[in-house]
Amino acid sequence: MLGSEMYLLLGAAAVLGTAATWLNRAAAVRFGFVNAPNPIIPQHTRPVAHLGGIGVAFTAAVGLAVAVLLHRQGIAFKDLDPLRVGVFLLPGLGFLVLGTVDDLKVYSPQKKFLVQLILAAGAVGLGHWALGLRYPFTGVLPLDLALSVFWIVAVVNALNLTDVCDGLVGGLSVVMLVGWAHFDPTSAPIAMAVAGGCLGFLVFNSPPASIFLGDAGSHFLGYSAAMLTLPGLPAEGNLTWVRPIQMALFVGVPIFEVVLLVIVRRRKGLAPWRGSPDHFSLRLQAAGLSKWQTDGVAYSAAVFFCTAAFLLGFLAWPGRIAVLAAAALFVGVCWKLIQRWEVAPK
Image 1 (cartoon, rainbow, N blue to C red):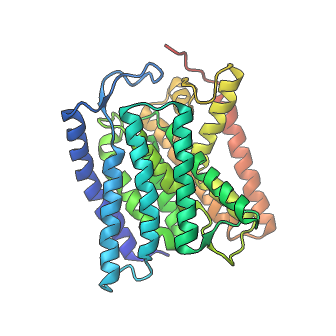
Image 2 (image 1 turned 30 degrees about the vertical axis):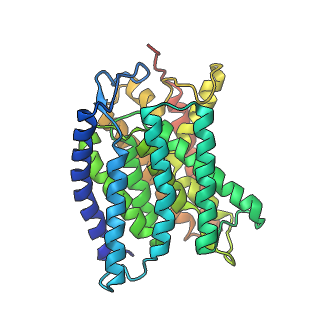
Image 3 (image 1 turned 180 degrees about the horizontal axis):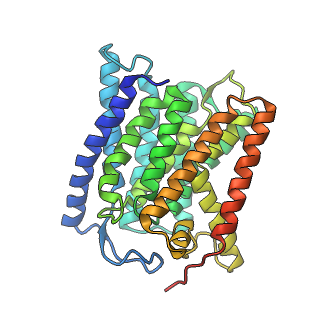
């Protein structure tokens, strides 16, 4: 159970995030940082400000700075580790900068992927060096570190690919981060600060959006979700087979998106990174759902996955098998339904 200070942090960050996004939007419009209409996304018919992730990241940084100050004064957040906050924010800034540069001057997929690998390796290496953390997927340190780097890059790109509908990634991030804060209270201050920034951003990003996250935001939020869900155990810690499944479930909706796009695009003879209107959110809208309804379906799926992840940590073997079976059935049904609708490219 989280203390009231965590919910106060969430609320304060939401207020600050609203103000920061308003200023962010005004600056983007003033300096011409807008996205032109995208033919792949039917509802994107007018220029919209982007770089909204800068406001989210600024809010998270300020919220965490205040939390660290209160911790040092002995007022609140007594279990907060300031070093962990710094280890989280430094690579997060790198991903934010990468996304911002890509928003302003589009990188090739190969170049962007290379920089993502470097930043992810830096994040994992910094956590291992500064905090003594290791991520014991296999017990073999080099392999564990490599898998951790892969996880960060995979989740960053998953959220980046999912971000094609107003309010979608911001809302999904709130569900995932608040859920994770309750699952792992040691990461709650970071998760709540970022989630609060997302709530403030959603005031202007909910349908119809007047500002987009941009790659700046999807990269920062993808990094946040990936870094927080990594096991991050002390060197002597043990990782069971349950933990990787819980990690995947907490980011289940973006992972579903990636798998869908890779398979469908390969069937069409397209490279996985090539743009196409095959995103689940666009397919749901082709089925007749509004953008709000599409977001509601995605948020509900995220709640389902987070609940399943929670239950895996409490149940015995029979219960775990039942949860996994229910999750597999849910994914299978969603897969079959999504395949029924196509979006014709323009």
